Length: 293
Length: 239
Image (cartoon, rainbow over all chains, first blue to last red; front, side, top):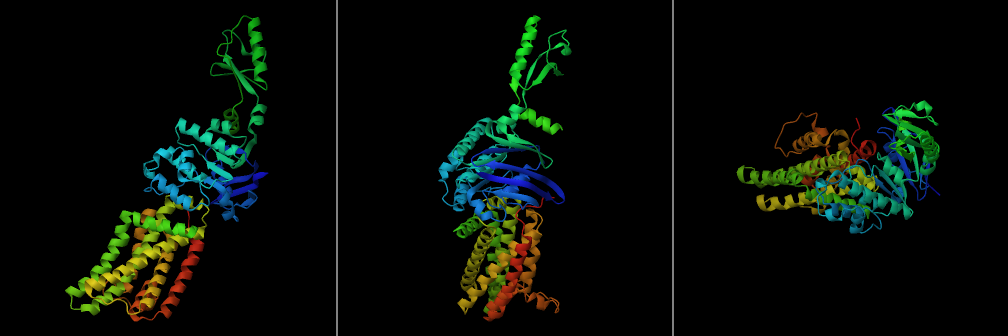
């Protein structure tokens, strides 16, 4: 089943086309990462999917419905963590959750929501006294109140300390494990790589790369890097390398095989490849490559 | 259910905001009780003058407690992106606005009643002769002024300007209804001022005649509703 189906989506703001005909699908129960630099069109896309804005062109289906026309029906089954949204600053964390529970049918108990978001110890604190990361956690608690089938998380861990970030990742994984579909945007590529099964990278309103995370990265191959031994001409090596900041870098489809070839070559000549590092392509490699185009 | 939730939220926030309470409760109640009491005890107008001023003062409560309060509250919540967050719940736009309007109108009606009782004891102003007509017209007036205040937020560019933007509305409402004493206005302007929602409420309370005032208020309600549908902004301007 497809939870989100976007086809040819276009959206402009005051003459500027923020989203220029993108298409992607998110399967039910999947974690999907929408990536891109600031201004790439991610937030606009989420706001259209969550029904805050009407699409200018293309079709959007969320849980089989038009998120703008059928907003009420979609809202009952979705949770939204917006990148930017305010709270009542003078209310406590507990009171804020209580108010939101009033707006939610069959809501989670307050303490359960706060526990999930790791905020239970702060329940008596006024919202204005929370740190940026804690506000994100309160946001998460509110988004989870209605036990949604689909969660939109726009920069869910921005401003969180590493511990809170790891805890949030676990919550996201657990929810996905229970069948919740999650669409997230993030600037932390490691976060996307760890969590998401599929991804799309946006640039200037278009999708420039997309697919399953594992397959996409596997198809990018990997790299072998080492310090070039003295008096060795890079051209003499058995595989093509580039020299980057004093390191010889060899990009290869199968980085393990490439490392073996290089080590054998070096052993035969009594050379040592110091600082040898072999790794598969990361999302960051892909991202930097896409952004550099 | 959701409408009662937004109604409760509006009421809770109304009474929690200490700074706003001074502006939207203490000041208008002080004026609406204090001026007639002064009139009764200090001038030669006696009870008749005090009663007329007490009736006119309803325009102050309508302009401040209903119109200004809702305009300031909604503009602040719009600019703090609280409205946007509320919209991410399953509440509909209608429930969000209607709950808030109903809540603001309720507080306004309550304060009008409090003032009517207070001037009864402080200045000897008799209670309304026809309580049903009084209730009908003050409730309708409070709802219409809250609705218009919500619609008016579309004209307010930033939250910090909200109170200043509502000031002319307060002055026109209070002067036209006679709450500032006899201020001369050009005769050509009088018919227009007589159609203001605040003026028709005060006239209805004064004369006991409610049919025409309720029709005028219905007209204003249509204006407010259409303006709300056309121009209400849930988020601050991006540029």
